[in-house]
Image 1: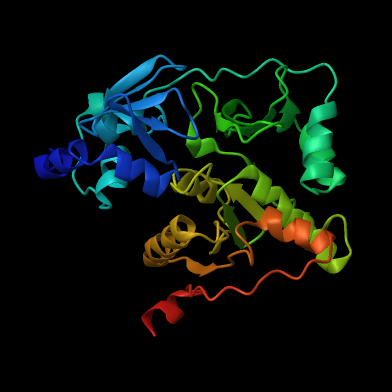
Image 2: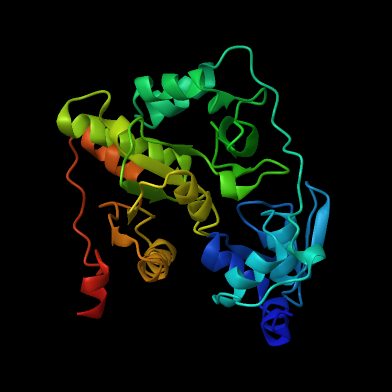
Length: 316
């Protein structure tokens, strides 16, 4: 059986601290509860353990319930994520079985005017990349005007979808999303490299910058790119299992405290698994800001922040 101490630790982990660290959420205390700034309908009680997501109609106690009900992570993996350890014992079949959720995809808009204006004009992303993703049904505009990023499983069935508002800063995952199948752009030829990002916008921005660097609109096709939809690495094991040629992981998370901390944590974790790991942090906060600065020929301000480009740098 699984170590009860690990379960107890996971069940008593402060969910506010956890969500701030791993999802980048921030909370404000108001009227006896903590309200998430990014998702106002997500509330945590004063005990910092009990939570309820009103718009989704789900709730629970502490981080384990959150990971299983919201992130669709199986019990065993959820304990590992919270405690930062690998469980060596087997779980009973009833707990080992994964909980299957039905993905609810938003209805498609008739004409995708907002999507093109938001991604190509405001965000500066290559229209060729956007068109390719739309043709492959990995990207579309929802009826309410949100951009929808879709991830598929090995049977080419949609299993994940995240939303990004074209007006304001709304973002979130669709009900029933399984982050193991997060949004990605796989290389068109076998590649040893996988670039890892926090969001789909940064992924496409990095691909656009790769095209601009060599003056080739198809340069993005030579490398794999994966969005984590946050900083949890739930999607990495599935992707590398489906793409056996991957030997190097390049972490391109945000250049802020949360992103840098997650980068170092993931570099160390996957180096121990035998992968070559390094970081490629953006010059600014994220790669979309880098892309916009590049397009406008703006020289970004130099950062005094120290981060580790490789595991060798860390140990030296």
